[in-house]
Amino acid sequence: MAKYRDIADDIRQKIKNQEYTFGQKLPYEYVLCMSYHCNKETMKKALDILVKEGLIIRRRGAGTFVKDYDPAMDNPVSKFGRGLTAQYEGIKEVTSEVLEFEVVPADEHLSEKLQIDVGDFVYHIIRLRFLDKIPHLIDITYIPISVVPNLKLQHLKGSIYGYIEKVLKLKIQSCHLTINAALSTPLEQQYLGLKENEPYIQEEQISFLSNGSIFEYTLSRQHFSHFEFQTVIVQQ
Image 1: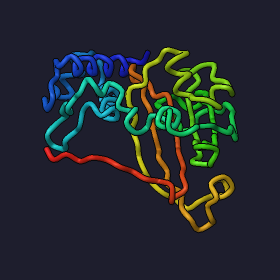
Image 2: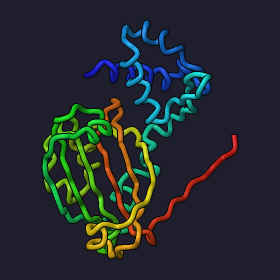
Image 3: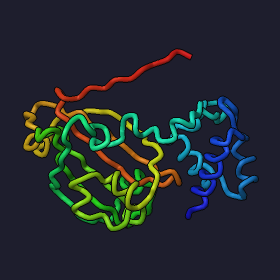
Image 4: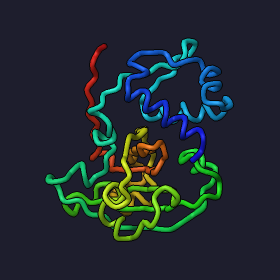
């Protein structure tokens, strides 16, 4: 395993064990580098993982601080970016049509998103997801083969997350989610019924395992009229 992942694992565990407590400022970066016998580039990669997981936050001019950690949220991805199968279990029937399934080498864009080397092989998956047999969204997914091996067509028709957790026995930890929109392409027009001048809403999701590895980069595209986002904001 890369050294920066080992460092991220160790700092993550210290946060969970409350060796670093809520609101506490982490040691200066050069102090951490000395403690872990690494250079600034390696430490930056380690801290970037924890920032994306929502465990620490950088404050310009002040340093890096621990965010509030709730052990009950050991799997915060389940609250929003958990996947359709789990999200609608017992509520709606979730089915998938696999439109594309291939293995491709990662380009620079995928290398950056998945934190892998250019040329590393990834699964490229496009699925049309249905709720009660009604087209709901299109998932465009990239998964590193080295992280999720032996992915088969049968897994894509069911739950990829289920395969990861129940078969591979890996723990899904968190996700970094960005919501944006763009005008529809022929793909969304054909499968979601959008017109040429209508937008889709996209959830761009980068998902992490408990060991800090990124296992998924997914673009989920919905018809604009079907999208709804709810949250609760609490004033501190």
